[in-house]
Image (cartoon, rainbow, N blue to C red; front, side, top):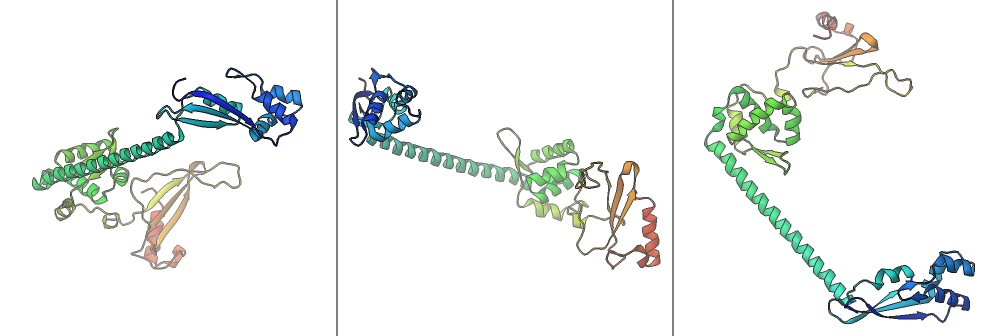
Length: 325
């Protein structure tokens, strides 16, 4: 036989089994060449047993040893099987001895470790080269003072994304207003080496990179741009206003009004700041809600309008007459 394939077998039965168990085992392991003569279900009917009991009896009291020459080192070794299934699984396979099998496992582990180390070193080298490329690219923008070539819109756009400096927030807070225009400006900034766009294999944006020197320069030369929500110029009666849609569900646990709202800008309700809240009934059972800060006028918390000075009452009531303005 070829190296690795079974060249001899040896069958043994325990002395502790009964005469009936010995007969069952003999029938179970009866072979015609390499084909089993009897199925466990046939033996079970003959001896009035459950089918699953037959392999269990054979496994408990008998062992079939399969001798083979190792396909790697050619030394003889043995495999022990206790079932027809295990026998059929191994009889035609080529095998390695235990020593060679262990050596193969060790070599495979070493191979995987080398691949992992190589992958890590490759990724590290790639990151180093990428960082070098990013720094060189952005340095050109600083040396050439490319920001001086920007118009007011481009300058303000650059200042904003540079201050945010976070991929997800840049997309949600800047590109959300006008996606196409945002990319037009970004492409111009990239050509001027003021931003480096790191991309994934599918060409989607992985991250935006800026020179560490750029933000202080932009802040010192900003063109009437106040980047943060806190510093934006507030209108006198800036407020949160929105329509709440009536929920006609008959389930008593559902809310009276529900829906989804999308805000184009951040909404900040400052802690300990006085707000006027008001609700108007609208068509189809909907309502309109408005929340307006009046921190510069009043100092009390959640009291009727009539408690305010007369001039403040008039201002607020005037606002109520036209909630959509």
